[in-house]
Length: 501
Image (tube, rainbow, N blue to C red):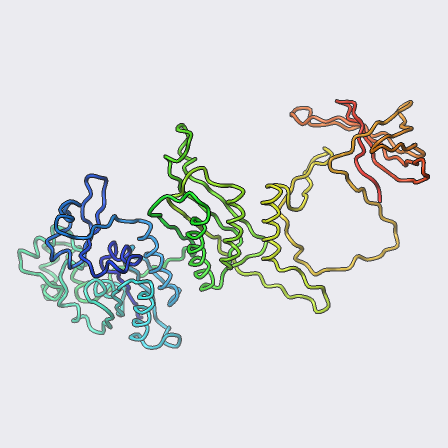
């Protein structure tokens, strides 16, 4: 078996410098904590030469002339995600040890990526593109690879356990008591610990001592367990200043969407649902009593056809944010996509060409932005006896092939609904309508069916009661037309519900 360990030294600092490459040549320290108790948690060698140490305060670092940066969990998350994504690009079996360390099984990958040395160099170069300096070690077991990755710089191929002998004992992660004792004994390297008598070591430290010596001798102690969790496609950015206008906000969203869609395409995936979460500057909200949940502005987009086109998604978010602007300036942006397999459609040879799904989705979004939410889509009937009981659902094109309507020869009648119903004066004698006036016209009832009386939802605010007929009207000019009419029994108002075709 062969395993490769990838370690990012000084991970906290590197995650910041990946977005600020101009600061690499400067003495730099990273501080964390709550003001005014900000302390140094990471620094580079130039900052060490300037006299700064881990645990110094921010003021001490600034007095030493060191460039001070505030720790960013968001940038650390991005760097960690880049590390995991790179590992999965080379092997499907990856174990995540820490934010700065992953181990991957490279057994059987020679035919795809070459020799173990070539694989290690390709992994190293791939992470360079993310501005991350890494240590990559190939070893026969994951424990030896992990220890060596923390101790050797660059690319290393571990073929003999004796290569670990020069590394310090602290890389084996011993307990504090064991480390203090080995220091008193003069045992400072892995090789020194490996040379001790196993029985004497067991009598002094018990099982923990034996485990450390096995690690020092290049043996595997912990099992390799690959991560089977689903891939996550999310991007977020913490802004240097609050954004109030839509145009600069869209610029930030655009860069996040480009990275996310590139990651989706790398895995041959697309998305049909994407969520946008904007963290707002609480001081920008006028209502001082606003609950905490109002400091976020969340929007979502669902697509009938999966896509990985960042330009399309950006345009859809632009239209959505124009209709639903945030209440305050934005200080953080988070985007997450639901990954699905792309949809492939085989068109029929003689079928008419269907509209481009992406252009259709943009058209629908533009119409919704123009006429308002809930006014564009496909009507969906509700499970109710109430007339006109429907909601406007999202329009989804038919996925099946276009079929011509068969001509069975039987007549078909359709009721063309008027929205809203037309008001009408209905004159009734002995429960039979004989004349209807609407739109400035008078129609005489020459045939009728009904009446049908219906009511419902008396337990709610939407109670309805109505009496309806199907009628055939003859107008003074001789025209004849069929209609459905009804009287609202609550208001006694008559209406024309629709005409029959």
